[in-house]
Image (cartoon, rainbow over all chains, first blue to last red; front, top):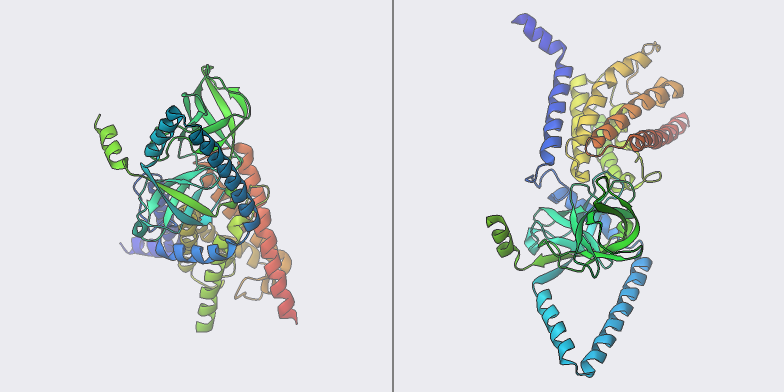
Length: 278
Length: 170
């Protein structure tokens, strides 16, 4: 017994090291599961406050580019308004009813503006922290977009801050389709470059060409249909030859995220219930 | 002594904040990032019990982890690095006759301290990027990350140490 105790004391440092390593490994492994505590993520109160302080300062960088992007977007929307006005004035009832239907489809979704206070693009699995939490009505599984396109999906919600799993994270796949076609594939990041991602599982008979727009499919309750994702940069056949793998140039500039929109699907609960039941 | 403890607490806080707010956004071509926070482990008093060194290493890694959304990764790496500190230090200190209180370029000599720092930083970087590679493996990327990360961390430590050295010479 005395030998045992003296052995323990003599090697206490190594035993302690092994204990800490074990704790770290438990944290590492547990973190990959879906349920995880807010405490060990950047959505906790302390890191949230510190990140929002630094976000207040760094938020001013790149305002010129953001301004330019918004101008462009504004111009695009104004063109759209002008076009719609023309169609309204033409008095085409068919066209009118078409837009009415689309409007009610959009009513299913609500938007909320949040600010990115922490963001990374160079890790193998990237996360974003935003300054809105459960107090502002944020829930998990809500979609996040910015002025240019898809950003990610909320996965951990704290009281005042939440963590968003970025498109630049191989743990998440996003259902997308080529605009004007109904075939869909899933978008996943290959961990190399923050400007590109890969659209996999797209059937081979789908017609597309380089430069085509990729949008969300709307098959999950995270995003409405038709949110910009990116454009096709190049393509290759996948291993089994029946599917294409497309290299997508993402429309979102992940190097310069600032203000984002969190999308709330009003019918999410009902939809989830049905999808899980059957 | 209490003054020493306070200055170490301040160093701990500054290094963690610097790491998560500034250094995590710096990278060479999107590969390695400088892991300066390990500097805290390097300069803990040489006479401090290994138990404390390892505990501080673990807490340091865990604090960085909470900010980076990587629970366990930095904690695991810095625990192992700080456990290896004592053997490393004894290798380089055995040549010295004068007992060293705090490892630094001033007390150990620039050459010896840099060797010690390089080995420790290299261990830390190898561990961090190998753990990362479990979720995403790419042979060349892993190598580039380790080399560039070690390089950046080392450069920063050399900078800090030469600043301290020129200050103490004045």
